[in-house]
Image 1 (spheres, rainbow, N blue to C red):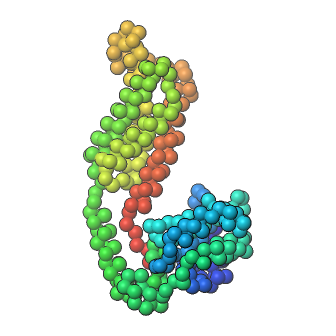
Image 2 (image 1 turned 180 degrees about the horizontal axis):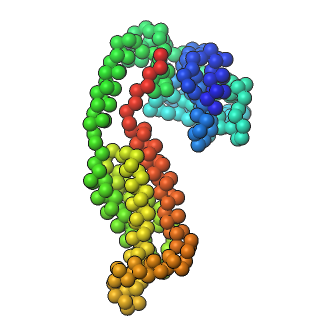
Image 3 (image 1 turned 90 degrees about the vertical axis):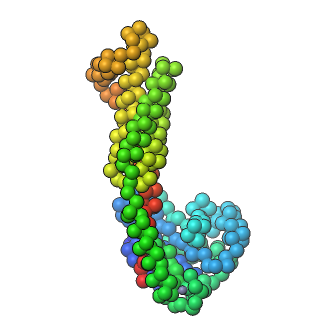
Length: 311
Ligand SMILES: [Zn+2]
């Protein structure tokens, strides 16, 4: 997707870095990005930077006009307004093949033409101080005008923020303690449901992963890669403890007393006899937990301060 995005950008006279084409086009600041070859979902994103003075009410009216997008042959659901970065974008998600450059350009023209009436010309003035400036730069993938002084200031500020972030160490001890506590709570829920219903709903695996993830994040303050792996292991541990606790409690109900060692023995016998069936508990814990872990990793990455400047 990166190559076609670059090619489409080049035809519009945009500059490009990696998979991002960007620049000033028809008095608008625009960006066309293609996802890297190996990314999970493949799409082209085209965006307009909202100039100061954009009337959000009018913009929202156009964005929410489903009929208009449909008539243009575009998908209303793929139009996104990101107020945090001040951009409005359209996601072109091809069904199977990589879209042709002409298709990208066609979509891009329709998208920008639809929005043009409510987006004023972008003034070539510094984003920060308002001085006239000609140089357009790309800051964290958003095209902006910025004067030398303010660019230097931005870099200095970032250096400080990054230093504070580096100085913030993950709280491993508390993360592990909270992870264990979460695993125990999850295990108690698992055993409780087992006792109450005489059955286990695999959905409980999701609960285990969720409790452990929330507890560990709360304890850690700053999440790292190894911590995410530990999160997955604690969720599996939670399921193991849950089944063990449940079997032990059932034994107690049958009059064998609450004997954890005996419960563990029965569990291993059951696992030996049930074969793959016994591992379903872990499978149904692992799948949602991997999904949760992936989200936690994504959030941790987004929380890390970054300053990427392309001139
Ligand atoms: Zn400035």
